[in-house]
Length: 109
Image (cartoon, rainbow, N blue to C red; front, side, top):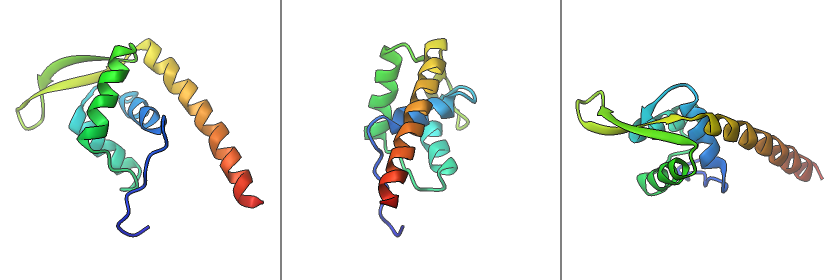
């Protein structure tokens, strides 16, 4: 894949954030690091994409946030999934399955 960063399809970032937070509360930088880790560097989420997505998802009620201390002893906002956020994760996963099947079919033509 070289040095090119894979662009996220619209909605994919939400799914990755929700899935990451399904495992427990994390602060924003840790969310980005975890996404990069689990995708083996395929997706690198910068603050310009991550923080607006976290705030938008918080406004929709999918996440709740609270202030805490990061592992480096800095003040950080920690995000965790709400019940509506868990439901949205399931919706996003189903949507992604549909998209991936459709793209696979198109590539086989």
